[in-house]
Amino acid sequence: MMWRLVGCTLCLFVSLQLSSWCVLASAAEPDGEVQIEVLFKPEECTQKSKRGDLLNVHYDGFLATDGSQFYCSRSDKAGHPQWFVLGVGQVIKGLDKGMENMCPGEKRKITVPPGLAFGAQGKDPVPPNATVVFEVEVYSVSRGPRSMEAFGQMDLDSDRSLTKAEVKAYLKLEYEKSGKPRDDAFYEKIMADIFRKSDRDTDGVISAKEYNIYNHDEL
Image 1 (cartoon, one colour):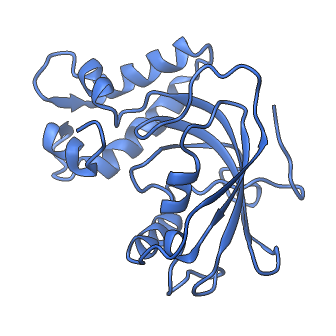
Image 2: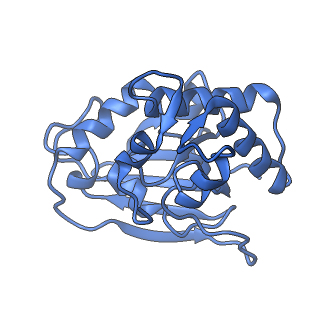
């Protein structure tokens, strides 16, 4: 199922530019609440998104003042839905909040105040103190490598650390269980990005301490 809005879709994921947006936003104080409008919800919901889950999502982002679009994934090199882990700061705070409890196939309009978006500094082309609106569709929800349950399942040798092979095997299993297996290059890409963000001491494994830095509700 593909949802097209004004000819293109947006995803804010783990590019360097978008990561810098998230850093700027996290420094701002919240000055309002996220507003959620459900545009479409499937009759059957196999799994609702929660913090730590791995999501595959498309976005369109607009300025609330004039409706102008400020980012479009179709114009990016990726050009297709991307993945991210919910609730760990890979997107702005307002999206982390606004995409909780979503079903695969669900579409939402999420209005985010400046303090939960790009803050008083803004980030070109988003001006300072701007309220932004995202129209989002979730394609898939799976247990990601940020839940405590997932950590235990990945840590096959129970040594309190995760190897690349363990993380990759877990991702492959989860996608196969969902009925949507992918090729090896897909798992390699996700696994490499997880290690780039999480293996702080670059020793080739994700320790329990490195895993816990996000302070999830489950911890």
